[in-house]
Length: 257
Image 1 (cartoon, helix red, strand yellow):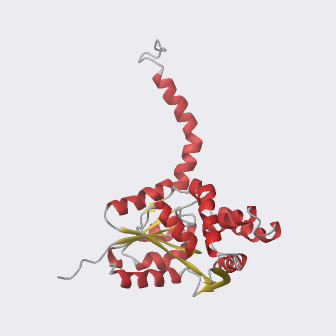
Image 2 (cartoon, one colour; image 1 turned 30 degrees about the horizontal axis):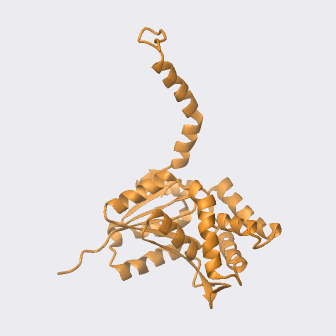
Image 3 (cartoon, helix red, strand yellow; image 1 turned 135 degrees about the horizontal axis):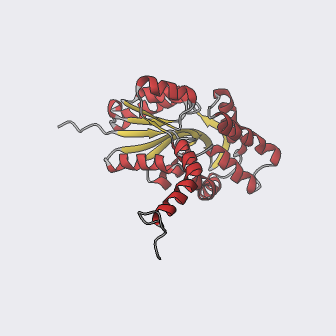
């Protein structure tokens, strides 16, 4: 009897799972622990500003950014970086998580489907995030190491754009996953190849170009930024209104307490 193909959901990380850049958080943690100088971290600061101000990703800038990150960890012990990554997760990544996205991912898990992160973030950090969130695993950019020490080089290509599609196709072959029945989620139009590879694409906190594509093709759109903004704007007003309703009788008089 042929084994039934597995289903899976694939999630981008930056601005999809978390607000901002995982790599920036990692760089910040490294700076605070004396791994490099203020001048060095300027690269991370600029990249994070691009995320916040434009909501988009420039492939060339990300490639430079990722290469710089690999160079920063060059010469450092793998176990030392992993231990620091756990601290960075607790301090910066965990508070920046979009809970709405986690709810979607957990629903897939509850349905018996695998959940994978697919990100340009270094694989070691991506695996840590996946483990902390209780997901199946992660696909990420691979940093080379020899004798337990990072060399500062990447193994293969940066996991970005079309490379994400290639990666999940390889994973699907290895694990017997039917991509036509799978789901994928991202915020960036650079991940359209990833979204097109599965049968059920959806977008989360989309940039303008991705939102246009999602509307055109009727892809589900989840925008937790909007919900957060509305809550911040109207939450206090609604709270005051609710309080007024609670303490007023049907005739408009205050009830006795």
